[in-house]
Amino acid sequence: MNLVLFGPPGAGKGTQAKILQTERGLPQLSTGDMLRAAIAAGTPLGRQVEDILAKGDLVSDEIVINIIAERYDQPDCKNGAVFDGFPRTIAQAQALDTMLGARARKIDHVIELKVDDKILLDRVEQRIKQGIARPDDNPETLKNRLEVYYKNTAPLLDFYNKQGKVVTLDGMAPIADVTDAIAKVLGA
Image (cartoon, rainbow, N blue to C red; front, side, top):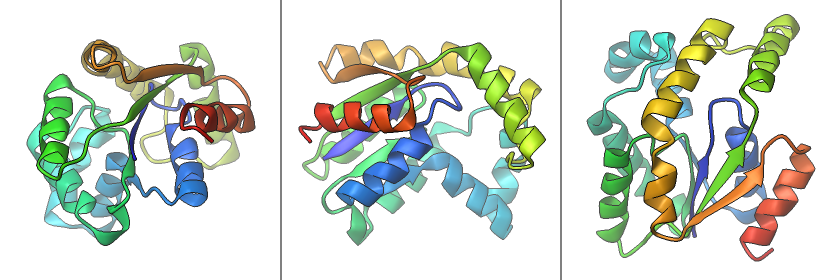
């Protein structure tokens, strides 16, 4: 089973992906985590994308698709994966469909976590106060990431709706309630 968790930055995609990984054995393929790890390791890719991510902009489709394809071909993805933060553009979604199709696979569900932007900004400010913010976690970067999301990524809902794959859930609900709602979508 292949799932896309969809929603703006801070919607809880990573939290739910980790739960799905633990409970269903579906690896979380988070492009953000992969790119941050490359930056931390000082790899050539990390150096290439560091400034792009610091501004909250999107990394090129070619780079992201290559990272995803390489990761998806690992043995732990044999039963599928949870795509977290990918695809972010229609071109990426088309490339993902092509990549999966070449492996006789497909996206089974797109789960949209609907949230309130003001609350997302409040969450970033709380993480900063608690000292648990990522380097790119600040209100200005989040505002830019939200603008990029609505401009480039939100149109994917229509792309996946045409395929009949989108289920919208209340991402503002408590984590356990969101987890339960996802389980129902997946046929618990």
